[in-house]
Length: 136
Ligand SMILES: [Zn+2]
Image 1: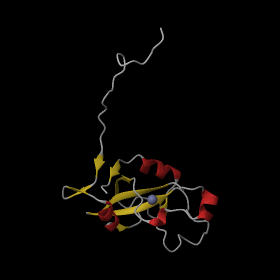
Image 2: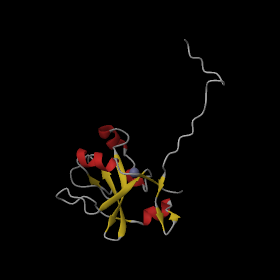
Image 3: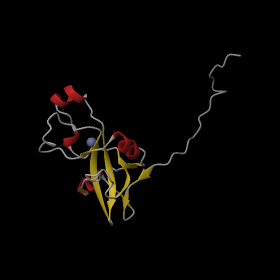
Image 4: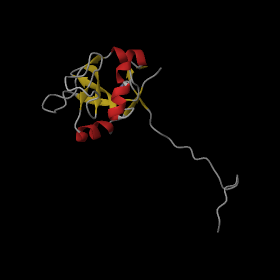
């Protein structure tokens, strides 16, 4: 029996998905508030987490995430990175975590680039954190 999609047999199923938003005092965090969170490294030099990661944010807060043409030639147009909101004691911090060094040079991050590098294993764990939505 051939299945033909008609208005008789087709239906729209409404899926209920959970959208987690980051709020402060009940108000949804906007991009500008997110940018005001202090940046601090989440991963210690020994590879331990220095606090509790809350989630990852699908929003690039500043131009330092952008790839230069030279980097794009080496790493491709979009080196994988995530923006993580994490809790240090009773304060929130943010950090940028890269899968590999986003610059070709070995002398650090460059003047405007911030962030840190996670091992593939840790990156996998971080990517499983809730995706937090930030308001415009
Ligand atoms: Zn980014």
